[in-house]
Image (cartoon, rainbow, N blue to C red; front, side, top):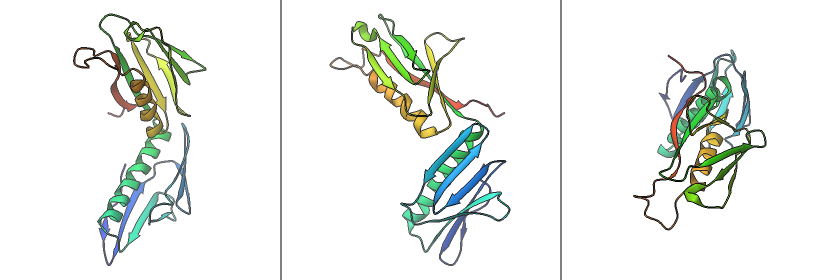
Length: 196
């Protein structure tokens, strides 16, 4: 998805990110991307960059002048964030998680329309673990695979952080983690629409 080049000229570095059939607006380093699967907003005001869309609205131009190494690294990072936003509103991100247990089966209930996850019987404990997913992330149980859930959303960071919250809720405490491997782990990362 990255189209264009990094041009090192007289004190400036520019990067162009290709926009494919999306509506992108940039206003004072606040980027809004609209696509078939939703809308994402992100601000880059904390970085010393210049951002704008080209006149033909096919590229987003990100530039820095007389930048140090760290500024040029930020330039590349911003382009990666933009690529993730473009991918999210076109294909949507999906993280699959599997339940791992040796004796006590982990019971997981999805409540509140896929926004809250309730974990029961982890290591045989009576305590109920409740994980509220971040906004814009939906959890579903897999139909064809036993003991698997799928987290879906347009924002990659929110989907991955929600997966981390579920994983952290099932960490084994005060036991040897080499022996007690129970938990809920990320097994697969990708997008809903697979590219060949």
